[in-house]
Image 1 (tube, rainbow, N blue to C red):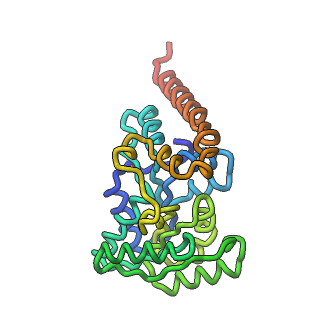
Image 2 (cartoon, rainbow, N blue to C red):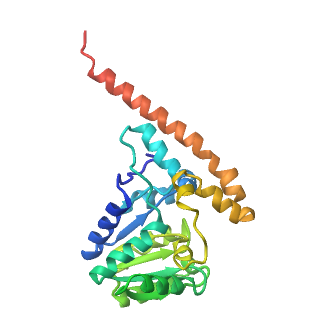
Image 3 (cartoon, helix red, strand yellow):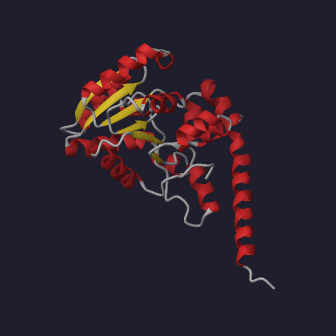
Length: 259
């Protein structure tokens, strides 16, 4: 769908996949594209390449789940968000003694998130916390120092929360040098985990209206994204459905017996 292979899993299955990669230190990106990111990478070949190379791709956003069910009756069983993955992975990492590293966010946010996770999940090993300066992704020396800090920590799991597509592109570029397991690109999950930003109620999330909740909280920042830019998803979904119909028609013709 949209040129990506989405994992057909629920949250618990996604956590199990992440933990399996962490135990073997299988380094790779774990991404959770939402509607906004799908719209963006449709026009950004580099971003599309990064997402296609990811270790795991989970759908964050009920519209993507609904589109998947139009394309295939099995579809996706549900959404898997970075905000849900972070605490769920921390819970299992604490149980298994796997170290985690929090990287990103505004000053103090990553540390606050780490502190909240430690308080919530007894035994969680926080191998390190870092808040890289603005523009670090364009500074080779700064990036090298950050990678060295992460590697020295011995972390099994890296949570990268510097916003899309910066986190995915930086993580992709640094993969050959990172000595960790999965790199989870979790966006604003640190702010949610630290209790600094309130998530939409579960009912609102299940109805696929979390975007409206966020728009109500930050209208000046998000109005253009949700009300103008992201409406392109309707065209992209129509294109996917047309392609699926054409593939189905071609397959049917190929199976017809020749006269």
